[in-house]
Image (cartoon, rainbow, N blue to C red; front, side, top):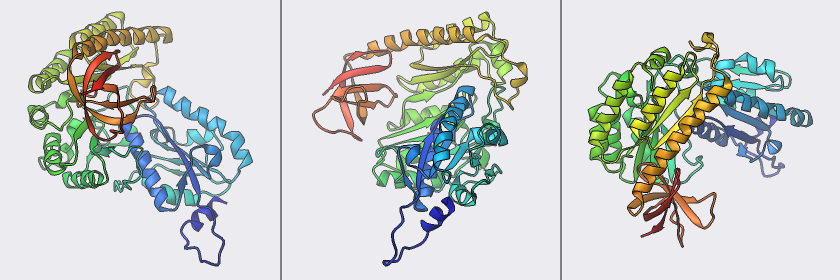
Length: 456
């Protein structure tokens, strides 16, 4: 049934023939920004093959989930969605159900075993082939595509969730085998795209109305090292700033403490349209735990990386990641994390409870820290960060900031929302649509997460 729909999308319909509805696809992405961008690329491929996107699985000929495998909760969420499709699959036996991304690359045939009604499992290096792979699906037969291949990064820029902002994949993979992380196994080694390709994509997006781009990489500050030609993140950022003047803001995530350089700090400081926001995961404030995680730095070395950036960049806004409950993390280790959080005065923290991942080096150590204790530590760090974030926001009250407007606030239809170049969320009332434009806002009130103000 589906193969017929796919083939019909490639045939020019004669005037005398009845016009068939194009095949429909529902796609939901989960996890990181890279997954969101990969999902855009998948939808672009399918659009060129004649597919149309639909908002619910019940309307779709094809249901795809672009998945994350970093934590167990993400995988269980996918299995929950797949379980909900069993009844729909019985009603529509021609429907094709596919799992893509890191979970597919990591669990492989285990997905078919746990969810027999899944037809397609596609790994991280094969998403560009999704249309062809769907064409291989037959009733009662399943397709698995996990082999590695070079990606072309071909993109349909019209397929993106927001008109004025976009992600750009600067590199893929990771060479840093942290003991808790599955990414190097699912994404492979680091592969950087050329500066010329990235500038060309940024120009194309800018010409289509994009005013903010964010460069993505698992360790974005290692961008270019694998090219062995002197390419660096600082040079890429500088050229984007100079050669794509239509971009109001240029961001980059996520960085690693071992690769903070003075060149990068100066590139940001010297070019006003480069974001003053740095996401620099620390994971733990304990040297013992950092060593067990194979993070490759000490707490003092992390401090020096932050000092290097803060000394060059005025009012740098920083966010970090923490893992609580890593195997062997003692109360003393956790207390060190609390102390470092207080010392560093981050603008925001993303706190995660340790989750064993099959295939990682830490998996064999089990999960000895009780779930209740991990939940307690999680809440302690979140509350410490809430107090710090609120204090940092309160200091800004009475000042004026430039806000890149994203659109109507989801919580208050009478206000617009956007972000500053330090990634601060700002809401304000406006009598006209300012989406995609910079607005000057005077800050008047705040919570720990959001600033409120009035148009100047």
